[in-house]
Image 1 (tube, rainbow, N blue to C red):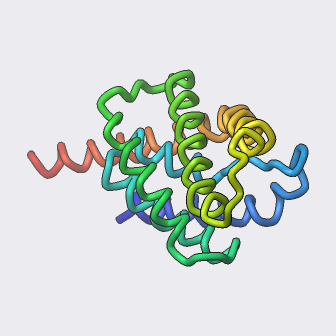
Image 2 (cartoon, one colour; image 1 turned 180 degrees about the vertical axis):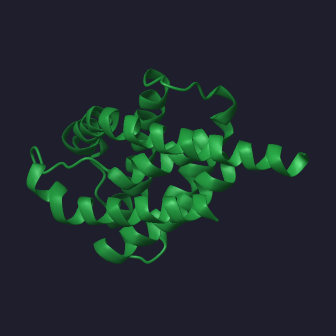
Length: 173
């Protein structure tokens, strides 16, 4: 229950930062995707279930703030969080290289899904333009910003995991 409360606070802080602060630090109209960072970190460090639920809530927050089809971002982020949860077995504390690789791949997959369901359906077939002008800069900017954000989330999640393990040990005794 405490873990869900902490993740809820992270999501609320993430949506507030992404909608109120990050528009002012855009580079070329591209801002880092903080809610995707939270989803990837939750899935990678806490497993499939946590990644899926975190992605669902983060996606719903994006759906509410961005407008458009309700549930599209929720479905995309839930899928990404669930897939990242499969890699929990490879979690190493204080490692940032592998999580940043996951974040980059997740951002690329997220942007491909957005292209397929928002642009391709409207007849915008120039995927090369979309990749060069939107996807690659967004992946790069999200990964660079994700280094700092991931280190903060890593500290929080390691504390939550240690607290959970201590509770399990106390229950066994």
